[in-house]
Amino acid sequence: MNKISRNNLRKKRKKRVRVKGTGKIPRLCVFRSNTRMYVQLIDDDSQKSLAGVLAPEKGGKVKAAYKAGEDLAIR
Image (cartoon, rainbow, N blue to C red):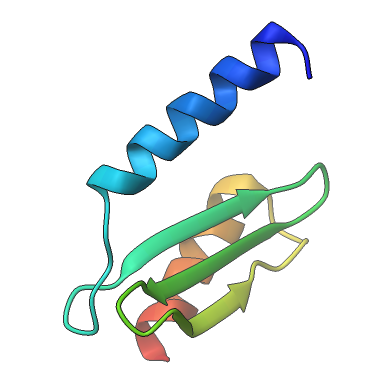
């Protein structure tokens, strides 16, 4: 493993230690690929995903993110 990826993993672990999701206040996880966006609410205490949404592809990035947020709020 090269030095850059080692440093990136170290930073990621540091953030994960500070940010914890509970059943009352879950952690929001956003994954963006080149074509889609996935949004999840995660409870770290029970290690379960509470809700997940796949953003629609049509309508542009901002509208898709807004729609994904609305869908997640409904669930």
